[in-house]
Image 1 (spheres, rainbow over the protein chains, first blue to last red):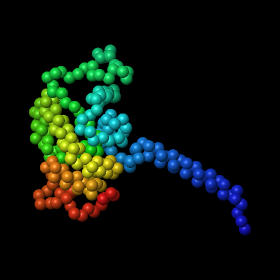
Image 2: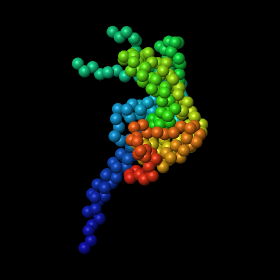
Image 3: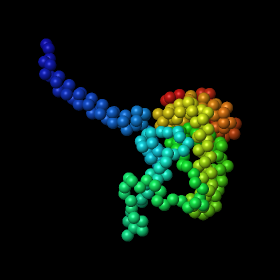
Image 4: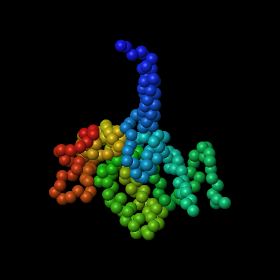
Length: 86
Length: 155
């Protein structure tokens, strides 16, 4: 006794939707990390070093091993303004 | 009323308020976080006197160290840049392999021992800088020289 194929259409739609969202999120993470594995367990020092990497290379996960910074590096440091807490 | 007018444009890319001339000029370090992490123990091996000098100056200047110890700070920057320059000159392939491994493994040194050993050897042969982990107990094998590693994702 065969099951009509119409019975499986909703399952196909459900699986397809999960696949689309999963592939989208994985692509997003791949692009954010520049093809490398993600960082985890970051503390304040790691975050400020990643911000420095962004200032040096233009990308949060970019890396460079030049001994001297490119011109303009010392000028692209924005002032860190403290939030008023009163 | 702010004392300084804010500038919000992309055109003025020169330093409008440079440091005074009595502070020696220095180029900032250009290496980013993973190469710095990879070179850190060698920077420590060569620049320990300069670093200690800077920290002592900061301790003794009662909170005004950022301004008064700029001369010592320049020496620290120059020394670190010289180490990175030498590593780039002599051990570039090992260095790159190590910091790319670090960057792929959350910058954890214990995940990249297999590529760290050739780097340590090359730097010791060429630059005579040896990695020593400060604070290792007497008579114990330092963690980067152990033959057997219990856990690592990369190896």
